[in-house]
Length: 401
Image 1 (tube, rainbow, N blue to C red):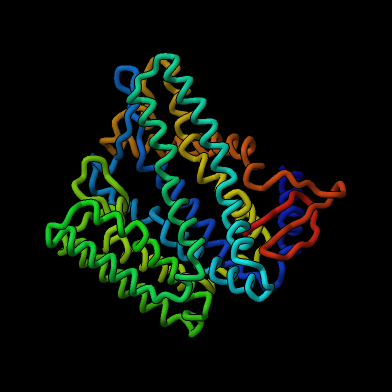
Image 2 (cartoon, rainbow, N blue to C red):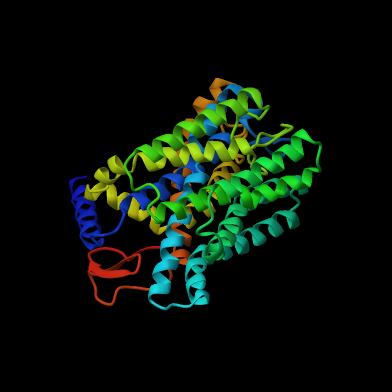
């Protein structure tokens, strides 16, 4: 144990020393928080139940609506888009200063985002085909593939907004927010067609993305007051929309629910996202202090190194554990049973470390698709790439966009 602690301490010290002094570590910390929040949220509110040798998806939120606050804690995509807008706007401005073309910049930005996607799609194409040939129920295969593919929608939206950075970077967040409000009024208040709600897939996530771009221009540099006002106003708006506007309390989709706040995003989801962004911007100073500790910063840096791998494979890890559990004769509590009681919640919490272990296996197998195949030139050293800066330090190569 002492050797492990000593090795970790040396690794953390090397990562800390290799990080450029001017890097805003809070941005990486917020990104890591957002990704891990989504992962834990999916593991907690997604259940695979086994009936007559078939697997189907459901959610504890459908049986226990009082669990809605769980979705408030783990629906962190708005923070991810906030950070994405901030980084994209700064990156594009820096690229222009270096006279890097838009095409080169956008290829570099999106390349790492989509490289690991190919591995997921190929593996699951083989798995799904093998299951069908082996006689698996079509509904089972469809449910599993949907779990894998459905989280990827945000990558398409994020990629589109990133590519549009030159057009949207200076857009005031109130404009896309007004679009979200207008679509909801048309859809819910005036009986408009359901399809109009999909306009909010772009407009809804454009709200935190443009807020992040405004942050990059110094919109929140004047102390804590702007972030505090954003947090307060957005929180009050969210409460009002849920209590009196008829919006669901859950900030994630619930099977069987008439309205989802997320699919597509609603005004309540946009307001809630702004509240989260306000909180994220408010805690920048204490977060910056925490990130000065080498151990804390190293953990954040390593999560960022494999952020897309973690996100893309976390559902596969959960499903692998669930499938292996089916080899036993009895349904396992918290894994195959209906999520309709507090006992299920307690059992599911015990499964989280097992999911994490399975995800670690997936990470070890597929992380190279995100990080590339580069290796240190000299034994015992490695390049630590942070932003556009390179230096050398012990341990592995670390790259964060």
